[in-house]
Length: 101
Image (tube, rainbow, N blue to C red; front, side, top):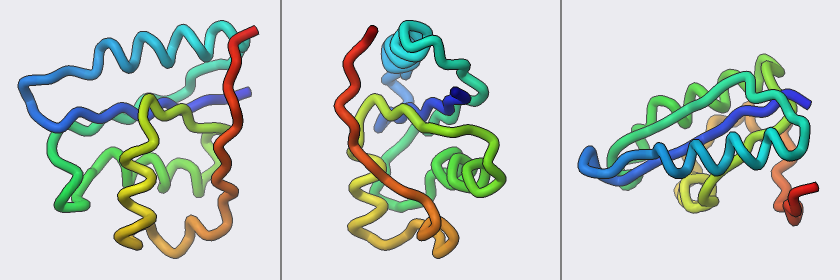
């Protein structure tokens, strides 16, 4: 399965290294291939998250089969504000329980 990873931190004084490491390890444990990583740094309040938008653009081109989020906060906030592009209505968003093999 082709996987994309999304990580985000609120300030430039933080980093996503731990998030990305954990997500890569989880994907590897599932025998999934990471084909893209999307990382935003900065507050999610403005809704101007360049890589988050790029993630959904790549999804619309079917560049991967599944997205791993370290935290679902970015997705939840976007859905509440309604700022996901209309084209994402074609995607199924689920919250499967992920248990490593």
